[in-house]
Length: 308
Image (cartoon, rainbow, N blue to C red; front, side, top):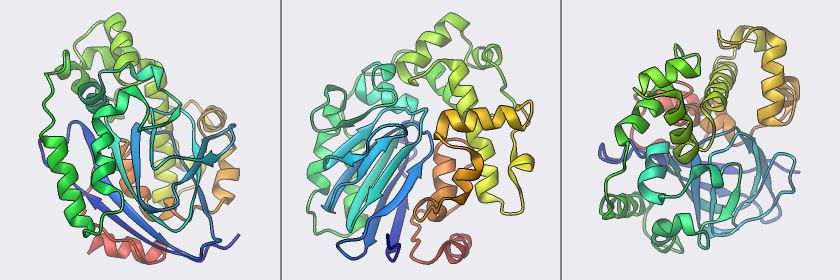
């Protein structure tokens, strides 16, 4: 399979009013021959919405499941498993929902959509986002204009306040803190009991607190390995891992393969956008990257673009 393609990725920082709800809005454009499919895989992440502006919608499936062609508006709930995907010539918009965003915009139990990929135009939880497909589909506007229209729509949705919003946000931020190592510490930071924390995490985060902490520990380790070429798996491990065998066990759980198998795979898409995606998932600190990033060069050159 050919990997000859060009990739243009633009990340848009949303306004401060939307930052507690969403990760960065992004648009990526793939140019390649009609018979080329670019294959890669995603690490576990928060819920995500993807809208195809033109071209073929993605082919995708959770690890261990069949990959199949998806809809123009495809969504995934919070995931604890890798998603494999294939992309053809297309322009696709993506928007990640943080747990508070899930609580605010869906009013639907997150655990009911955990580790699922669904048709966003048909699922009851995602009705409020369907107008975004109308904004994106077939638009001839420049991406910056489309991004502005998406932001305006999200800002002007008339929704009631979320119950326990402060606790949800506190838990959301605490999961990014590598010093928070166990459920009791997470409950303390969120100023709630373990029982209330369990309910809150199931409803808005998709998984039990223990699983969420385990996932963040894994993502921090993966981020170190992928973003720091001088490290190997042993030296990239998060300090909360007992040993490498402990990490390998988690790697197989989340990615469906061993660390060495993952390292040997090509990552034609993720290699170019890994830093931003890991920041979106709270695995690494947010950077001072510019509002719009364009990655049209090979991975090494793309890193230089991001620094200037």
